[in-house]
Length: 380
Image 1 (cartoon, rainbow, N blue to C red):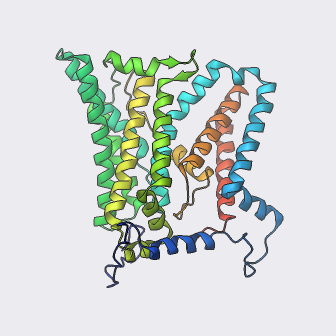
Image 2: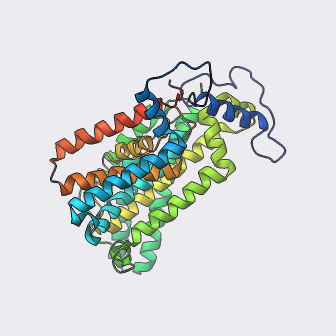
Image 3: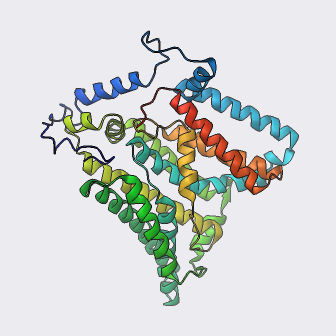
């Protein structure tokens, strides 16, 4: 059984082809990826495809790579119009608040992009955020009480948080690949485990005794008060994530596993090992998000990260990724995060009640999924 619950090619006795001459993916798997992309683009002139209504074709166009530019253009137009109607929208304070708010969701969504590209799902990222941050804070607080250097405590705390997040991600990957469990079930169970562990670490209390360096990271703002340090951290990881997914063999393998699991097996890709690495990356980025949240609020709270996985997944879907795998980019995920963040900010400035905001966000997600299906992506 594969990581999505299907039959494992190895169990069916299928032969696997050796890697290509470059040591990476063979031309067989690359051809499979191209075939999948062609199957997912029925608007490219295939005479055998049935005709669709104009509304359907609009959704399809907006979800394509070129359509993403138009989507972003419409989004910018909305921002300009609202900025004219509400001048506070373009104020420095509003920009800083909105950008800092988006940091944790962006970091989680980057990791989720890799997972969803493999046709998986990670429901535990919000809980990993809270657990890794809380574990790190409890240990740092104890070390500070022991009069250890705050700089050394900060280094140890960061290392512990990143290691904890990565190890939980590895555990997700191993359970999915070794026990042949579906990602939904595994990560849902891990969500519960990490949430419970977070409350057990300090009996559900907040931890505020943290090194001064943590506060410095969270409060530092450059360029005349327009660029928070934690936003720079998120920008760096966004660039690294984009390069990893779009410019490396790791990214190609990620897409092939999601597009055609069997082709990846036959091409010689170690699918199980790659999936473990993908979930480890997701856990690592969740831990980074946890550190940034701790720095932003200068405390570690057991409720940090609660339900953040839903916003992260929504941002990835709005960015055009397919929940069936094989499609999605970090840059489009960035657009999805910005879209959700700014729309939420606009509704806050317009004093839209919280429950109404949830309805609007739900509608946006459903429309995004309709647009995704408009590209003819495979559905399971």
